[in-house]
Amino acid sequence: MGDNIINFYAGQPPLNRVAFQRQSTDKLNAHLASPQTRILVFKNGSPLVRKGQPGALLYLDRDTLAPLIQDGYLGAPEQETDPKRAKAFEAYRPQGSPALLFLGIDDRGSNQDPQNPKGIPYFAINVEEGLQHDEGEFIEARVSGGEMDGWTAGVYSGARSVMDWNARYKFCPGCGKPNYSLWGGWKLNCTSFLSVVSGDPPCPSTKGLHNYAYPRTDPVIIMGILSSDGENILLGRQKSWPEGMYSCLAGFVEPGESFEDAVRRESLEEAGIEVGPVRYSSSQPWPFPSSLMVGCYGRAKDGQTIHAQWFPRSQVLSIVESASSVPTRADIKQLEEAKQTHHESLKALAPTDSKSPGSGPALVTGLTKVPAETAIAGQLIRLWAKGGMDLVSKL
Ligand SMILES: [Zn+2]
Image 1 (cartoon, protein in one colour):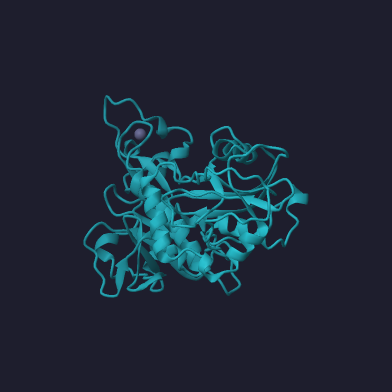
Image 2: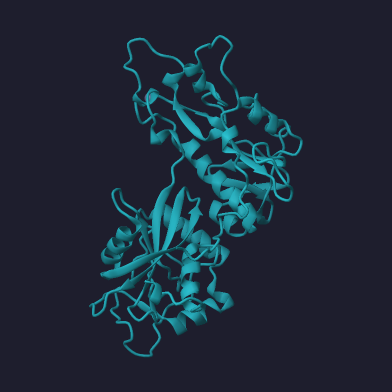
């Protein structure tokens, strides 16, 4: 059982995705035509925001974006009478046109028919060069996201991940032909669905179910590793991070691993710590580009020689209660750049000094910042430091 924490980027209540409408060209075009419709705009993964307000998405309307939206979504041509083939044309965008995503409907605040919710439709569109707006500017995705209100961040996180997927998965993994986007941006098909070139072997993706045709979510475990008495937490940092910044260790879950296995493997690999019991705390969508952060606590086994850095609860508590502990906008930019230049960026490497938990009252020097509450690492650290729950007894 988890800790029932609602993390930033989860957006509560979430936008009603009305996923069952994604295959309907008519429904999606009707939403697109609504005068209330709001469209998020992305360029190279960066959102359009109001100038000088990184957290304020600047939604545009359909008329402003008409040259890019063109005819919206298309359906099967009239001459297509084979229902199986017609499925290749469900709410699709012609190959090469800007990706247009149907995100869902904001149906908060009224009693709704769940099959036919009413409210403000949300879309997202990808622009290349050229779009200028007097009141807007494109800004780094992570800087912008961190300044949004929680609900907007939820809309944004899904939009950014699916937009990134549409923008980057240009070719079919089955045969190498170009892909096109359908189902309002929630599916990518191989263009061999649309026209069979005589002599070519059939693309394997034209039969069966293929995971590469749907948006991906990559699980990453992020770990609050506690000493066996629960009074110290293991944190690490990368050299490229802002000075004094430490965070929880993290790593991608590998194929064939459970979350628990991944926590134990990563702790051992990154910090030389053997972990016994592990439990799930909460999760967070992390749209840079499409991770799902799985927050876990783990308890180190007794009597280990360690080569990582433990931080006592009193010190971490004083850090999280200090206003200067939260990364600044410049810090976040630095973190973003570090991510782009370091392949192993999620492995927050522990420092090399040896320190045993409980080795004395002296505080470990150097720690001045931990992740903000908008990052799940920040939540894991705060939940433990404030001691609101007896985490160790639950491990
Ligand atoms: Zn193919």
